[in-house]
Image 1 (cartoon, rainbow, N blue to C red):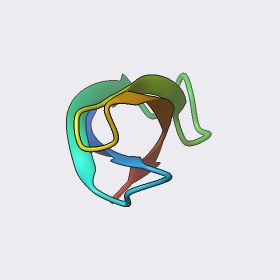
Image 2 (cartoon, helix red, strand yellow):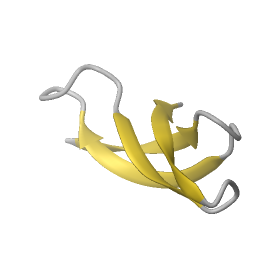
Image 3 (cartoon, rainbow, N blue to C red):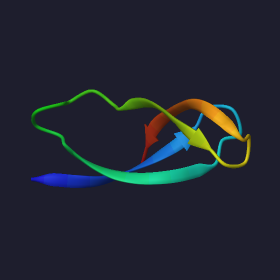
Length: 49
């Protein structure tokens, strides 16, 4: 089953994105480079609760 997770920018600390992931197939937290509209650049986004 896929669960909805929130992605938080590591620079501005805002939750910009939500996505889904399979927690059984990928037990580690997601770490993705995405565009942050508040910083106006691509930054690292980490999964939060």
